[in-house]
Length: 447
Ligand code: HEC
Ligand code: HEC
Ligand code: HEC
Ligand code: HEC
Image (cartoon, rainbow, N blue to C red; front, top):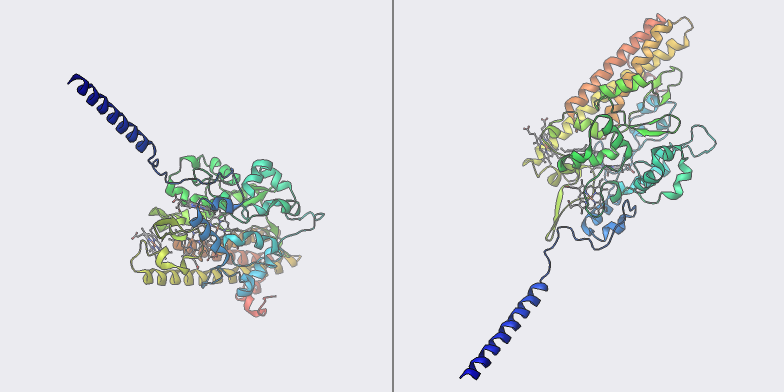
């Protein structure tokens, strides 16, 4: 009996041990819980080659590459690189004496940025010329820049001639302009943005995810200037990001981009202040909507849901871009058309007023008997009028990002231009300089 009991017990122990071993092997061979983002390939910090990131994130990469194929124009924007100067020849007059009067095309997809900066006639590739183009012009065009900034600093890049930087810039905008590899979190990659925020006492590392979904665009879609001899990339945000505050900043530091021929006005060129225009209290911004909500809506492919990196005009896919929040898409599209048409008409009225001011100041400046102090006042009014007009004109949404504010700025620009014209007429004591519509009298090119 005892022998049987021992055998049975031994058998039981063996069976239990086998079960335990089996369980352990089973448990150990279970797949570990899937991480949300599972890196397959290690990507180096600031890696400029987006295809390397694309191995891990094929959907984002594939949608990103589509920005190369977009070519459809919308009424005021879209992805065809039409010439603004041909569409509205007044701008040839307004930008006389500076490179934008030679070449000014509509923006298109991120994959084109590097090609387009290299082919613009605005470049000055004569290395001996004091007005040669600095390396700073690559700042918003390439995924190589975060690495080059880390190596050379903003100052080193600014001091380098554009042509000398060219061999080191081979990628258009890419993942490295917006993401940190590994974590894939959104980051500030442009040191000029970091410094501009610091000057306002802000630290982007404390920003919410939704705020970052707009702030990454501010790496590039902002107003900026090149400060001093080293062409140091600077955002004029110290006093704030509203047009009035930037105007005050530029006035205080006495900055000018160029001098207007014959009137001798010290001029400012506005860049593309999408971020500032949008965040200046627009309805959508106040409601917590981010740039990425309209320009990078979620798409679904099979089981995958991801942010479309095929960034373009939301008017090309309003159902997806606006339809996530607005049920009546047709109605909001009609509203966009109305806003843009009104902004465009108001913008043209401002341009006509500025052209009148320019012609009056030119005549007053050519008159040896003109009052110098009044003439100087006229120039400053022209400077401000044109900066305000350009702030709306160069902003790429034709008013949509902030309709009320855009119209207010344009109304101010027209008012300032008319004052400039009046001052010039007073300076020359010549009432004939008060005539309006001078653009239409001088033929289609205005000159
Ligand atoms: C509520 C939706 C919405 C938000 C939010 C938004 N945009 Fe737009 N954006 C538009 C619309 C609509 C247009 C006009 C497109 C057109 O005219 O074809 C536009 C135009 C643009 C354009 C020019 C596009 C083109 O076709 O040339 C750029 C660049 C742009 N937005 C950048 C931004 C940035 C940067 C932000 C955040 C600071 C932003 N947008 C926030 C809806 C939005
Ligand atoms: C590294 C700089 C950079 C960043 C960051 C950036 N952009 Fe751009 N973006 C550009 C440049 C430059 C162009 C114009 C390229 C051209 O015309 O060749 C452009 C073009 C565009 C266009 C016009 C596309 C078209 O097909 O007409 C839209 C819309 C746009 N950007 C939106 C955004 C949004 C939204 C963000 C943030 C999520 C963003 N961009 C971030 C530099 C940048
Ligand atoms: C112009 C800025 C910009 C560029 C360039 C960019 N991204 Fe993004 N990316 C974003 C934004 C904005 C989001 C949305 C983030 C969020 O919602 O938190 C995002 C989200 C993501 C996500 C998170 C999942 C998702 O789809 O929402 C991944 C992964 C990603 N991007 C990969 C890439 C890859 C790969 C590249 C290069 C091919 C790239 N991104 C280029 C701005 C950018
Ligand atoms: C993430 C959500 C969201 C997206 C995406 C969005 N909107 Fe809106 N939109 C809102 C909210 C919220 C309001 C404010 C509603 C209110 O206050 O009644 C608003 C208001 C508006 C208004 C009225 C604004 C005014 O000042 O009268 C228009 C027009 C509009 N949206 C157009 C658009 C268009 C066009 C798009 C796509 C390009 C779009 N929206 C995308 C959320 C969104």
